[in-house]
Amino acid sequence: MTRPTGLKIGLLASNPDLYSNIRIMEAGQEHGHEMEFLNLKDCYIKLDGKNPEMHYRGGRVLNEFDAIIPRIRPSATFYGCALTRHFEAMGVYTLNSASAITQSRDKLYALQLLINNGLPIPTTGFANSPLDTNELIQMVGGAPLIVKLLEGTQGKGVVLAETKKAAESLINAFKSLRANILVQEFVKEADGKDIRCFVVNGKVVASIMRTAAPGEFRANIHMGGTASITKITAEERRIAILAAKTLNLKVAGVDIIRGKNGPLLLEVNSSPGLEGVEGASNKDIAGKMIEAIERDLKYHKRGV
Image (cartoon, rainbow, N blue to C red; front, side, top):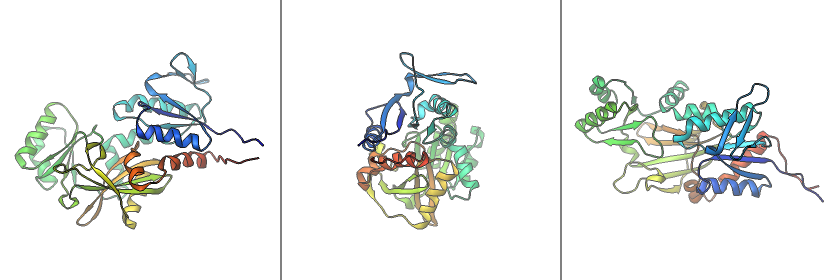
């Protein structure tokens, strides 16, 4: 009685102690696969048209992987995507591709792709010069409004300007630092809540309502928000699935708010955290990610 060996799957990330990374490692092992945590700062690349190689600290050549799960923190996007792209060049399956992660991380480009596919977003403005501050504020309906750093994540770099004067000061301060920002209408009726839809391989596998901490307008779990299971509408499901598909993401956290005229798409995250969604839904989301790899690689575990 023998079992065929499982897949060799690498988790390309920065912190092995994060809940999400621990769960993915566990889920892969539970499915019978050999899992290895690959710290992206310890990986380096050999560029060679005939024989590209990925090397790891100590000189080891990483040439035995069937699949890679990239979980790249925003500050490591450039290097993490370079590594992911190189694994792809070596013929290794990646759960999210480098190009999909790159475009999802460019908030402005991602919004342009999403609206071009007919997805509804809050009214958003972008300008390069502080001379356009007043018109930018009027463009999104005046204060209160949201100012977002294009490079921000997990609620960081997202600020609520409650008055026109505060908005002007904030926009001009960011501009003086040469920071790229988006200015976005504040959807008051969302009431500090958003919906995180977890999409895997074109299906919403779980949805949670995130509620901001008292005195806070950002509902991110990392900012003290709380999560509870929620039922989404058919339109919210359609938006979540189309958003992930538009950005070519096999795994995505799609954030939606409920506006007075219907749901609005806020953001699409290419490395969504698992703690809030697994805790609230009691679902094995990490296992769903492993199953997505098995499905795409046509792997079937079977006893003989």
